[in-house]
Image (cartoon, helix red, strand yellow):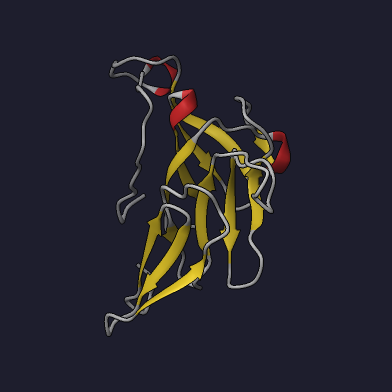
Length: 157
């Protein structure tokens, strides 16, 4: 939801906006398989993409994108894999859910890597939790997830 109360929906290949009157508008429909969407206070939309198809104008999709009404741009990621780093030096493997904190950091459920990742406002990607597939409580990489699909951030971060 944005600051004006509009709701944004990831619906397979389309990001849609439901305004406060209930009117639905398709914002974009060129990104294959969008499974998560988050919007910041200024209306910039963040979403992961993970399919590489020949019909995709953005090319490889293991990235986190930002969209502000013009063209979508890559916030972080470059190709399928696992690597922390800044911008295109980072790699994701089937990123699915995204969430934002009050500072503008993007949190990503990186399903294929079984990890929760953070993209800071400079585009630097770090791993917060997770390692190999499994189910284990713990701190940082001692925790285990099995293909996390969603992530949320509360008001205190």
